Length: 74
Image 1 (cartoon, rainbow, N blue to C red):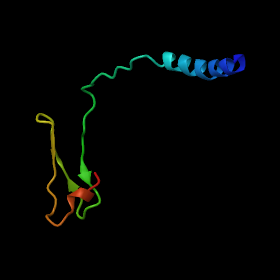
Image 2 (image 1 turned 90 degrees about the vertical axis):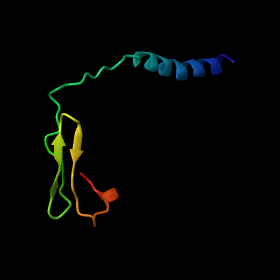
Image 3 (image 1 turned 180 degrees about the vertical axis):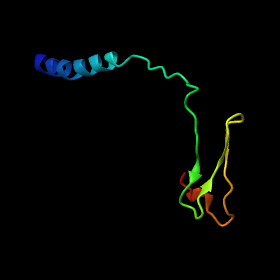
Image 4 (image 1 turned 120 degrees about the horizontal axis):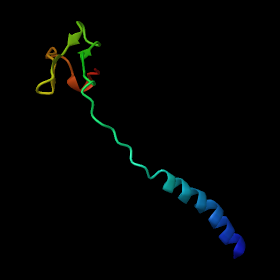
């Protein structure tokens, strides 16, 4: 019995200590310095550059009707 209890303590104690040590909150603040300055689809010919509207937080790109938009990679 003592051997089993010792094994349990040796196994679970480090895990519990690790979990308790990782209990800090990480706060990420928003920054006005982060901006998307360019957005394009370089895989298209010709390359399609999008229009960025910061005020309305929209990116608009006009691609040919023949393009499968589900396969676009920015």
